Length: 602
Image (cartoon, rainbow, N blue to C red; front, side, top):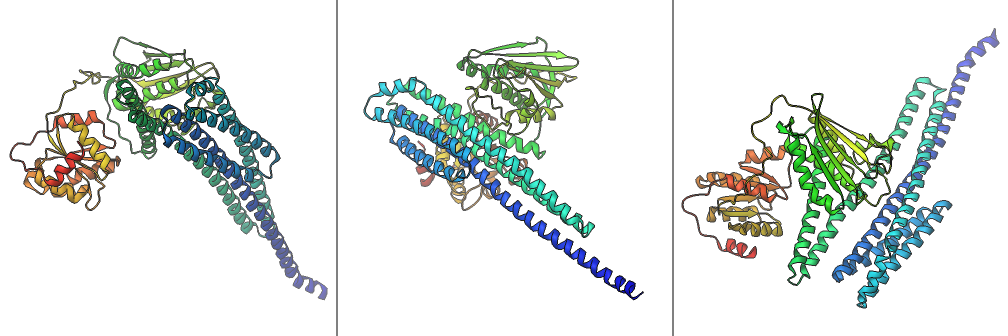
């Protein structure tokens, strides 16, 4: 009996000791697994840095090539400086990559190949610059015509893609390793205390899962930012080259007109890029507003085709439109419908080789309006027929027709169609076999009496006295000069207090007012103008980069008559001026500061 009693007394101690031992063992196991996880996360960060450095290296090589071409075209020293800066960046990125891949033999070998290709590319670029400096343009042009530079650039891009693929594979393996370690930690913690171990294991497991997700999100962010930077630099380089061409045109009108056309196209691309980003954000947050009216879908498609046809023809493409003779009315927002079909047509143009064909048909099918857009382009892999409609989706087709982009257009198209009660599907027999996009929209029960897409008469607004207020002096001066070309009397001001003084002395018909001004913001300027008897009849227009519905509401509450988003569309501004009256009665004489501002914009 005594021995049994002692056993009973000692049993809790054994159980406690065993539990304590298991807890210590579980804690030790958890500690070791945690160390492995931390080491693994460091390796994940290591791969992230390698991917970012590869992206930056490719961007720097492209910058060097663009700067060299800019110098060959214009002879400007600015391009040489940019070329030198790009080569310095290239050397720095290669050095950083050498450190990143030092422990990976395969990646070191690939980096050696990449370094050799970049060296050859820079040598060719430098050779052409030396020939140009020696006034031997014909020899430089001969090198350019060999196509060696493009082949080297393609090989560099392929090598960078191969190295990134290896790093992505490493990241996948490390993520799997992290999950395995997490499960082992859970199992080790369950034995001593089931509830505590489960809670701790789940916390650790989901904590690690969150780390993996954050790392993936961080990688996507870095890739997106690198891609966005590249896409924004794309239009900026031709814009800068266009300015240089205009500076060196020496009165050559044909060269000046071509440079202006180039700059206008690139500016439209930049504005469209920003607008697509903003529209995607608004749709995701449910902030986009449609203005649906009965709209002839055939007329919308016809207008889009006619506006895009010159660009397609310039790219060597044939565009055929087969539209039904009967009007097909849908309940839709004309602006958004135009955006949908422009996105689809531009996507087809971007991925179709010269000599290819784009076909568009519009017809009625089973109570729906159906638009089919077919091209003979690079096609779509079957596995990506659905994913191409996701945000930032890209098709790695390896085609020379690929012109970049953020992968927003098709995602935006599907979301806008969903808001209209419609849908879009993609079809393709595979790479190199072309593709087809089919849009379905429900037909409206009632048409409308007038075609809202009828071109408007281009009327000229009566001459007005206009004050342009913006803290960006170039913005104010350029807009004032443009308005003066239409016979308006224009003045400028650059802060809120200066604007108030100018309005009191000028009594203008229209004030184009930025809302984010120094000394006194535009909303307060608007409210103070409205307090004066003469200020109630002045047309006040907010011209701002703030375009959310809440921003427009705030403008109306402050007393603005209209809200335009920067950069303002000149045709829209002209229509606004046509709709507003010219002030009658006595006007003040311009102030000295207004005279100086007016002279500065002349």
